[in-house]
Length: 131
Image 1: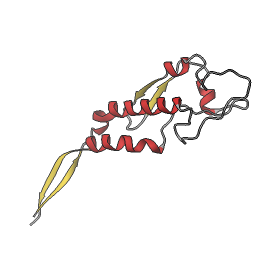
Image 2: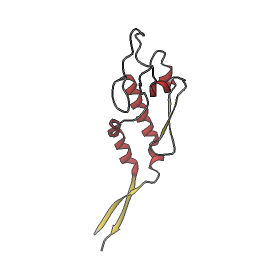
Image 3: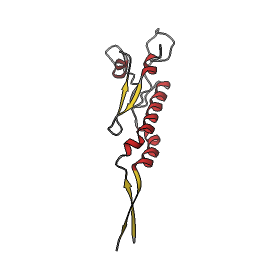
Image 4: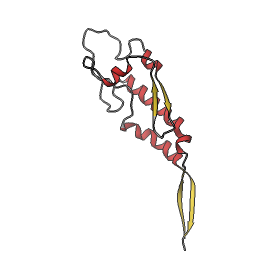
């Protein structure tokens, strides 16, 4: 009898991180356009009136346009480089401003990532002959 076991790819993150990074970027961009928290999927709280008619967190578009994601050497860890001083206030909320989290990863990203992991986690097979 022969037994085949998938051989783990110990460098799976190196071979998949660019694909995963694109999915994370798209995921956060989509959440932003839908004005929802990327972690919980809840809609952002509306602003108090009268404060303008522009979409939430898009008065100039600077915060969204300047945010860049970078994959780290640790699996599934990303850094977001933000070139505005006020991004953190929206992400966490303050005593005067409700939290409108615009960075993060929620459970609904899993179906998008699963095929990438399946493709990269195992490379080849180890075959055992069982007497």
